[in-house]
Image (cartoon, rainbow, N blue to C red; front, side, top):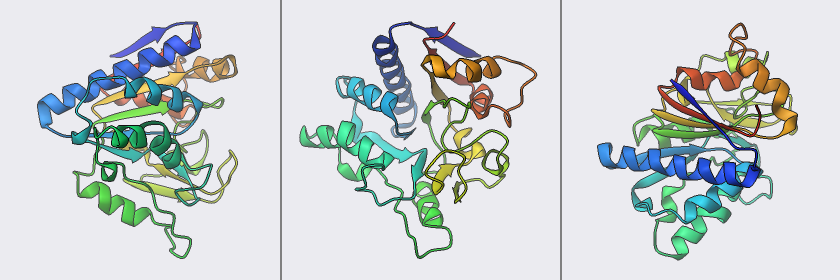
Length: 232
């Protein structure tokens, strides 16, 4: 069953999401000894990372993968991995709380036909080829990661990482976890924050709307999912 957590205070909402995310990671660590956490980029993620920094958690047993990435080098200002590294992994590493190698970047390879997707799949395969916990943030059109409504990305049946040169949202070149890969997660946190997301949130709650029309609905197939929203 999907839980809905509402708070009109945006900052407080994201802090609650960060604490909830850490609770889910702790549960995985207690059960399995290691956790694979997949995260996106964006302003909401940065705030959540700041909250996670303050949580007591054995980060040395947590591995990070990127839900989606722009086709840019890892040090590019638009890199989602750079956001994760700068706001969470680097401060944890400086405090001796994590091995920086626990954060796995998507390394863009412009000379490869798959831009580096197969290599990233092999890296995840070495850790079980599944996510334990995933953080997602819905866009104004209801997209999550780089799975866009009424677009081949959300329909693609490949299990792993998908690359595209025709993203409906700039820039056109992107990598994303496939729908089926995201749904390997045992727990999911989905953020629906901001008035601009109201129409998409309406589609999320519309039982007649398919995942293809609102990719954020993919979390409904994840057994332990929580939606954090400032919308009513």
